[in-house]
Length: 201
Image (cartoon, rainbow, N blue to C red; front, side):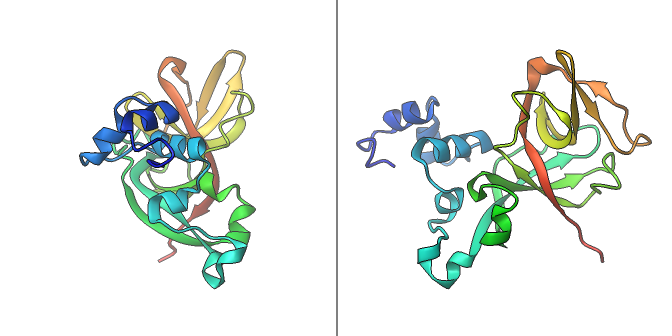
């Protein structure tokens, strides 16, 4: 990337659409989730390659059967809202490439843990969800799918449903949380939940 931009960090910032980000990362800060995906889109690179330095593919031999998806330390709240929103990658998890592509483009998929039971029984506290960053609603409209989203300083996982100009935030477990209208002035969709993993023991 630096070669493509002549080694200038400012030029990298302009290419990705950020200000001072690359210099900050060079000095030790962690990039945000949004910044990671901006880089992938700007340079047409795979997120697995960006995080790990290698990429799957049919020409890469047996290892290409696996694609590594980043799992973030940030926790999605299935309750009132999680303040653990860091974009630090906790680990990368291997998935079969053929299976993974049925869920979405591997470069757009990320994993989060969930805390809280407001989406029970579909999603329980302690579950891990796979989120497709490219699925952010049908032109900003929602039909009841389960989405990860940022609201103010917290991130949540709930059903979203468009009602006229507003968006309703819906919980499956009404005993844990009440439905409400989202504050769209401080609201950003991370992506749609496409898969859930759960420990049975």
